[in-house]
Amino acid sequence: MSTFQTLAVLAYLAMLFAAIRFIDITHFVKSRHQQHLVFGTAATLFVLWLLKAGIFEGLDVHFLGLSVLTLMLGFRYALVASGLALFGSVAVGYGSWSSIGVHGLLGTVLPIGVTYLFYMLSFHRLPRQLFIYIFICAFFPAALSMALKTFTLGLFYYFEGIYTWDVVYNNYILLIPLLIFPEALLNGMAITLLVIYQPAWVYTFHDKFYLNK
Image 1 (tube, helix red, strand yellow):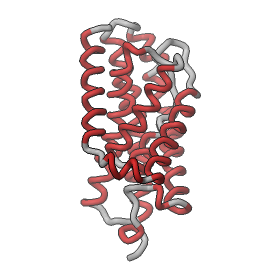
Image 2: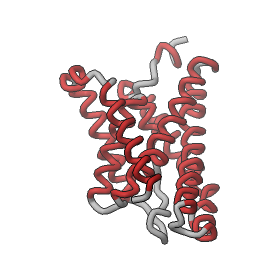
Image 3: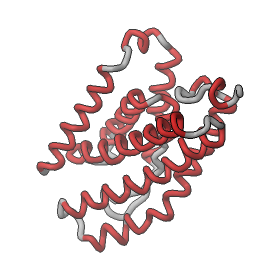
Image 4: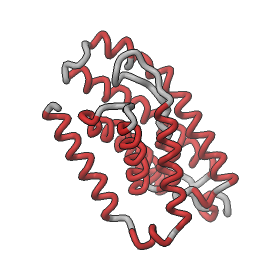
C-alpha cells in the first residue's frame, strides 16, 4: 500500500465516522422506514457495482447510481449506504483492500458531494420546479460525477505508476463521453419515478416546494 493509498484510507474512514457521528442513531434504530431505505439502497448499489466491465484491473466501468442515492438519503446517509456497498463489493473480491480508500473518496464521496452541492445551489438559487429538480439535481450531477470519477481515478493509476498514460487514456479516460449520458439517464429516470410514485422515499424532495405552488 502506497503512502497516498494509506492517506486515502484514513481520510475516507474519517469521513465515514464523521457521517455516522452526526446521524441520529436513536431515530435510525426506531425508524424501520429509514433502515429499509439505507440498507435497501446499499444492497441495490452492491448489485449494481458488481455489473462492471474492463480489461485492466481497476480500470473498469459501471453505473454509479450515487446522484439518486444522495437525493434519496441526504449527504450523511448516502455516505453510509455507499460505504456499505463498497466494503461489501471488496469483501466478495470485486476490488482490493489497498485501494478502498481511493475508490471511497473518488468513487463515492466525490459524486455524493457534487450531487449535494448541485442540490443546495439549485434549492437556494433557482426556481423550485420539478423539472429543475430532476435535471439540475439528478441528471447533470450524475453526468459530471461520472466524468470526474473516471478522470481522477485514471490520474491516480497513472501517477501511482500502476499503468502508463497510454493504457489509462485509451482504456479508461477515453470512455468518458460514452459513460456520462447513460449515467445521467439512469439517475434522471430513477429520480423521476421516485418523486412521482414514492416521494416519501426521497429525502430532498418536498411537494410544498416543487409541486404545491
